[in-house]
Each structure stands twice: as structure tokens, then as C-alpha cells.
Image 1: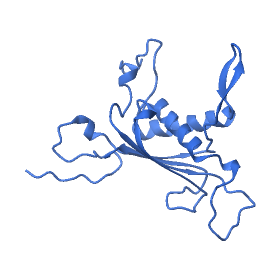
Image 2: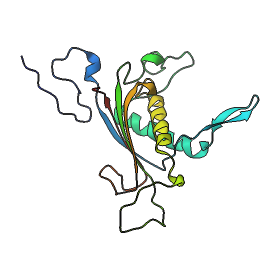
Image 3: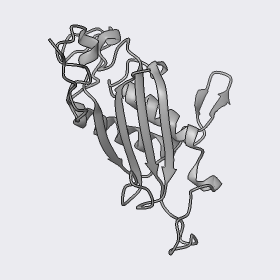
Image 4: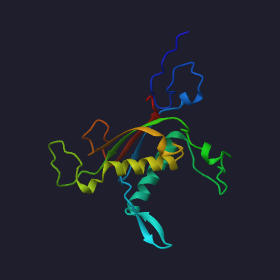
Amino acid sequence: MATADIAPVLGAPTAPVGAVEPELLLPEVLFEVYGTPAGQGRVSFLGKGRGARHSNETALKPWRAAIVQAAQKATARHTYIDWNSTCAKCQVAEPDHALYIGVPVAVDLTVTVAKPKSAPKRRRTWPITRSSTDIDHHARACLDALSKAGILHDDSMVVELTARKVYPGEHRMALTEPGAVIWIRRSDS
């Protein structure tokens, strides 16, 4: 009996029909996040006994919260973990609480940053200034938020990462306003 491939669609399995391995039947997740993108900067240590924090914590926290909210809405996930590392809502232990557990994951990330007023209006430009933040910092913020949202068990599961930083409307994956488009799927490599 021949197996037909299922077209990759949001929520559709990414494995051939008839596959017996349940981890092959993971859904693809594609969603948009709106807000001001913030990269995850370096950690600053505050001194003896005072802990540490990210250098851009005031911009990073709302951006990561927006990613968590959009990811949970797109996947119907939740992240309420009780004091004993068990979800109070579904009674699942924290290590087993993510959508993707123990499988290689591919993430495609398109971050749309605000275009400066001084940028040319009639030709395509690229966000290569310091104010648009390094693309790897955007990727770190996104992957950490996906772990917090209960999508990834840990961001070390990502074996393929495609990240791009664009201005609104200047790329086929760009949004019309600042935010991000995130596509998560099981990796074939």
C-alpha cells in the first residue's frame, strides 16, 4: 500500500499517511506576532547578591510576552506550572509539557522592524543599523519565548534556523507593521 504525502498546512501532520511514529504527526505552527521587536541583549550582573538582568529588559519583556501569547493562541497551549513542576491545569510534569519534545525542530523567523523616517521611501532598504538590533539577538528572544510558551521543550531542539530582519512590506514574509512571522515544524534533516 503506497503512502500519500500530506500537504504541509497549519495544523496538518508533517508525516506520510500510515506512519506509526507519533512524533512524526506533529503539527506545523505558523503565526504572526505584532509589537515592537526586541532582541535579547547581553546579561548584566548587578553585583554581589543582586542577581542579573538583560541590558534591554524593559523592551524585551513585553516582546517575549507577546510571542508567548500569540504562540499559545495559535496552538491552544498553556504554561501554568505549579510549585512542584506539574501543570495545575492538565496534571502533566513540566518535562512532558511542550508540544515538541525530543524531536529535531526547524524554525523560520521573519522579524519586521520599524522603518526609520530618514530611510529612502522609493527604493528597497535593509535594516542594517545598530538601532534595529542584531538578528541573532532577535532569534534568541524568539526561541526563549517559544520555550516559555510550551511549544518547544528547550530551544536546543532547534536544528534548523532561518532568520531574516526586514522593513514593513519590503519582503514577501514581511508584515505591514512591526512584529514577526514564526513558522515551526519538525525538521527533516
